[in-house]
Length: 326
Image 1: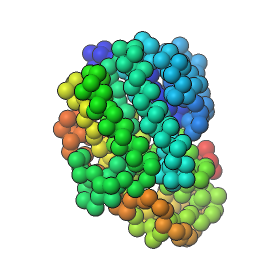
Image 2: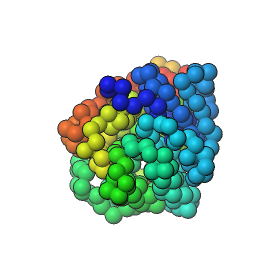
Image 3: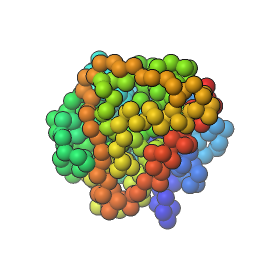
Image 4: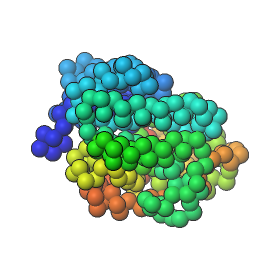
């Protein structure tokens, strides 16, 4: 936060994995933070350390409830919108739930801001908007056809954001996150992300499941990079309103190699982890085959550069998992 531009923030989905890290960072920078979360996927344990603070307020409510949301938005300087139902497979199984949370929920947030006169919103979009585009690296403006309801909701969020910029002067900036990972990311459940799921299996001495051949590539991005991008977007000049930016490391890693990196780091805690062979499951419907971000636009316009490589992020995250889930 520069020059005291923003003082009070609302973080939607603030009890989630990324949201709780954003709350930490904003409080550390001297802001007041309101966190709204319905705890559908967020966890109270992610923000338990913040609850005693006078500059932090937790509101357990759903962003689709207009009255609760308007009350939460009232008097804030900016909104960080991270509330969503993530996961491509979940959206394919439950498209209506994804639409309600990710699209109707986002529209409610924009409407609450309009009603309360709040201008700046930094919101989470997703690398999934690139869909079936085969271009690598992925560059803003080269999107393909969506491969999942989740991708459609994020694409429509970007369209609504651009519309509200034009119609109502809302200063919306979208961040297309690429496979964010780190401490507090949930390894449980059918829709868990690859890194925590692999770590959990290895810690339990079980074979991790690789979907398909395991040669799918991802631009795995440590959560500190996502937090840095949010801070940069909050401070960005008003002419950045309506823009969307890839937020990633600009490095590509296939899932087999990723598993090897995890096994190397866990070997100190679980010596047998290195010998565990993965099992191969079916390809996941809606999955993107190859993902690698071009982050030059974010570098130039948001002054964003990754503060943490994949390996550095794993060095931080894996010991946390070993301690909490071992």
